[in-house]
Length: 116
Length: 109
Image (tube, rainbow over all chains, first blue to last red; front, side, top):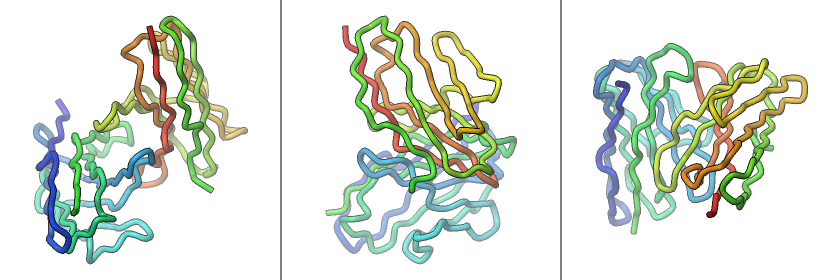
């Protein structure tokens, strides 16, 4: 149980295009989903917290107009990187929470984005 | 200053060795602590929670010292399969996880 999927697993795009990443909880309903970004040899950095049916809460320094988050249902959240640039190239990981404490946060396999 | 700090390593140890990782956190209000394991190009996976009383799970022992804001992970009888990056994690409010940058472990034959 507690499986989280992400799609796509990797994507290469040209600078200026937008990229959408999906995060799904496959066998449970997630009250909250989180989006992280990880640059090489660095820690996972929380970008935003997403609750179904409400606006995402973004961490300081994360541009909400650049990283659009939609949490349309209890099993799906999407992150759209708008007008992607090479510095947005990173490993994007989502997690879905059962809401029963931080240890019930389950991670997706991540999406590797390369912007040329 | 980073909220969770770890020695990046790498720690290169032979099979069977005992290795210890340390971690410090700056937010005294943090309530929960964890060790995660992350393999190359993969998502992090929960290894164990860390309690003030210390806790053990097989070859892994974790300890928390709230007064010193210090967390440790001890791995006994290292296996080749233990090679990975170990992430020290604290939890703030709203179930948010704050990750350290990780300590790399390489176990060799």
